[in-house]
Length: 387
Image: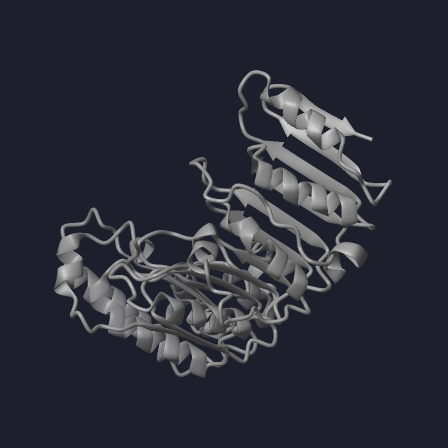
């Protein structure tokens, strides 16, 4: 066989360094570093990739007969060696999965090191794997209301306080799930596009609930320039009663709003969010609790919000129960949304006869937009379209 033929088959090595770095940047860091053994040319290519992905499960085979402490030391040494490598210049994305809480101080050090290298996005989550994420900060504290045992809670000092601080001018996507922190400081989030907030009181409780609501308000004010905002039912539940002394910030940039309706609290604050989001175009409501709602009916706003009259063009309601407070909100939106193009409702499983009664009410609602496509998906009876 012609020796030149064998050499010509290695087309990958003939690619420019920039292209090779781009290719291996999609690999977990363990495998990216592993390419250094291929040849002298590949030896330090991995140090120029902008994405770092560390996974302790992937790096260390848990089936091997090695103690947990030794396993943690091996993982720590590997991450330290990569981050402290002199050839690393700019880090664009940093993903870390570390299930050993003994390495908490090391995790903080690693994140600080990454930030010093111009980090624009972080994907960090302990205890379970996350999907591939771009340009985002995923904040998931170690404990929450459902996953901390009484023994673990007793081991922590009673005066232990947690604060969540985010200062990232290049951050585009922020996802917070936090039932630990008692204070939030959001600053320099000028590039923020999407934000998901799922927060609530700490497991030990907070004596002054009004003060805690004020801190959630500060969190929302820190992300008020976001374009797509999503709030969990737990967050809205925690805000209950917040509007005595506090006001929502103005969300001038929000064009898409998603609210989880937990015991009706999402709809309780819907009026306030409509008033403070003048350019809202898409509204999504999801009922996340099937228990009896604490809100009997939806109170109409004193005046029609600007976004409803001028900009709202799509409404989606998920897990609709057909309750009076839900019907009140739907009737208001249909009656006042002049440029509404689409409203879709996904219903839960209904009892016999309930579907007919609810659909009859929906079909009788006045619509400001004659071009609106109004559809109701019923699990027992298919899709109903109202013209």
